[in-house]
Image 1: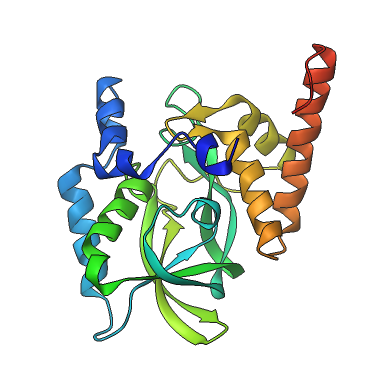
Image 2: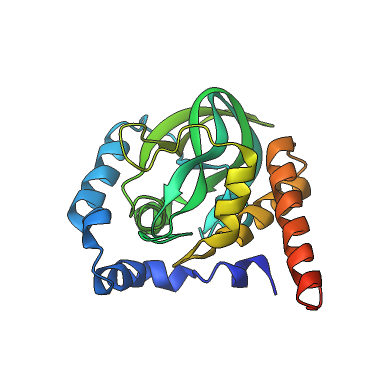
Length: 236
C-alpha cells in the first residue's frame, strides 16, 4: 500500500470539503474553524505577500510525502527560527476529540529542513484553499511567511507554526509518550502511527536528517513487530 493510500485523505475530499462535513456530523463543530474564518485567515496571509513574488509553500511533515498540491517545482529548503516536532494535538486529522493523536508543527527556535513548493500563478486561489482546508480546519496553526533557503537562493514561503495559545499545543513530550499516543490514535486522515512512519521514510528519501523522528519511527515499528509476534500475526 502506498503512502498516499494510507493517509485515507485525498485531494477531492478537500475540494468538496467532506472532512468538515464528517466532523460536523459527529457533533464536534466547535473544534473546527468556520469556513468564513478560514477564508479570512487565507486573505490575511495573502495581504502580507510581497508584490510580484511567486508563492511558495514550505512543507516539513506530511506535505513532504503527500503534498496534494499542483505545483510548478519543488526544491529542498531550510528555514531558520523554527524547528519541527510533535507539538500539536490532533483531534481531527490523526486523532479524535476522545483520543487525540499528534501531528508535527513548527515551534520557535533552531532551524528546519523540508521542501519548498512553488505554486502556479494560474491556480494560486484554488491550491491555497485546498491547503487551508487541510491545515487550518482544526484551529491549531498560525500561517506564517518565512524566508526559505533553496539551492537557487532565498524564497518567501508560507508555512504553519503551532499556536501556543491554544489547547492544541502539547509542550515538550518525551519520546515514549509520543510513541504510546501514536500507536493508539486515528482520525479522518488515518492513523497517527502511519503518519509518523511515512514522515520518517520521506525524510530519509529526501536526504533530510532528523534523528528524533527516525528514533520514534523505529520504536513504533519495533512495538508493532512485538505485537504481531505476540499475536502470531505476519509482520508487514
